[in-house]
Image (cartoon, rainbow, N blue to C red; front, side, top):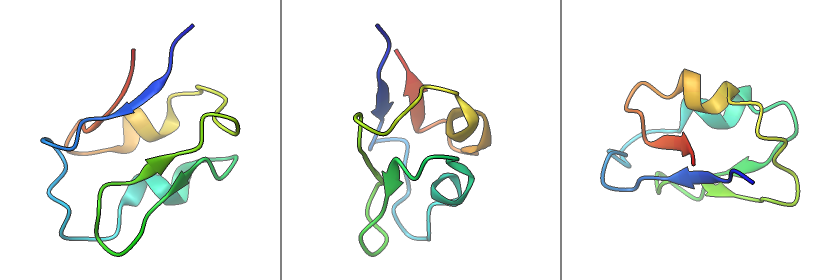
Length: 61
């Protein structure tokens, strides 16, 4: 079973995360400009956030 992982080393953490807005189920949240948090109970593993992240900081593995 895959899970969504946030690669914080790839995330610049200096802006609102664009992937938070594209999640269809609201599984991604962000506090300030920190790397997003994933609620795996909500995540449907659709990959929209993975494809949308320009830094490739979100991966399904």
